[in-house]
Length: 363
Image (cartoon, rainbow, N blue to C red; front, top):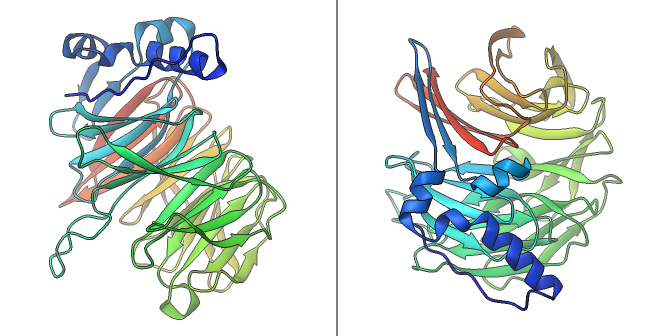
């Protein structure tokens, strides 16, 4: 079931033209029959993989060659995921492979989405468990309450260029954002006011991740930018702990390894690097992609990379071994997420070809 909230602005105004484009993009969501017709599910099974293709692209967008899924986030339980398609967010039910919420309000392409935390057995459901955060090219970040039939949003305004990434800090009731304006900002989720404005980068910031082991286990964030560096920030004070500068090529993404104190970075030169960021040392360089590495994700001891060369690659970082190359998409891969249960890993990948693919393989 899709919940739509379409306004009727004057078509002659700039806002009206935006709304017209939005209505064309969401034409399939006006009734269930149209949505079913324009949502393609393509299943392909083998001994090692099972791939599902979800497409929310309308026929008009497919004919024009435009559009594409720009961001994807998976819930802690793997039952729910969120995708950003153009300037609209979609909340999916993974079991039924249907859209349950549509998040409309941005005036630019959605670049990043984040889901609130899951249930905490000791404390119950956290305050922000039912929220979705979206970052957009319209310079804003929006906090959505998806418990409502028509999700409402709180907007965070302050960046002067496209917001490229964000991270939710549940313990501090804050959200950290990064932008092409070269800054990293921290915001109070309750009031919407800014906490920190960090400007040490001198190139647009492309990625941001949280590491609970930084700053004496008080936690911190890592940001990667077009100045080819990665900066480490203290969560509580906003001070810069260290900068990693051996990367060549603009830093596109950072992924924190589970159960280890390592990170992986991907860059526009097609190379991946494995770092001991606590010591500021580069341990290994992985070479294989023929174009920029746009996104990274870990599953147990396997690193997954998505690239502008339209492939996904699975690596064993300890040895540098390339395990598998997946050619699932027809366009650049822009986002990946993983979910591991028992001995099976599920890989969610999104591409500018307008598709989201779910690939399962042995963990």
